Image (tube, rainbow, N blue to C red):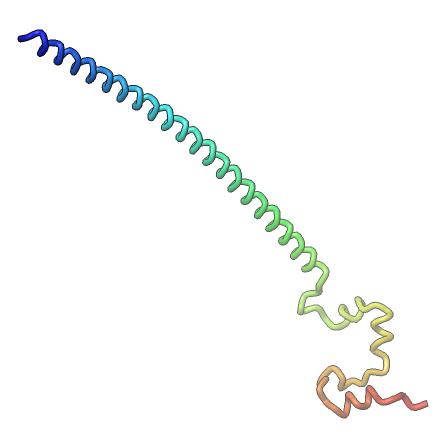
Length: 125
């Protein structure tokens, strides 16, 4: 082997060693970038889970509020099977005053033109 061949092989070996070192460095950089990306993904997933829990809690609170409102409204209204006497007892005095003078047929047929005219006609003095 000649000295020039030996020098050429030594230079090629050093060149390959530098390339291997560069490849190892690139791998280390890539691994660090991957760790950073995975940590970021984990933080984002935790934030998403927290947001989901908050949304579920807000929905549950709203649902409870609606159920409570429905329950209160249900207590304020009378059931359909309440006798008419029970309903009459709950009418205010102003309601009774508004009903005075209304003919019995008014509630049975509100579209009867003669009945409407009689109600709209001036009261006889």
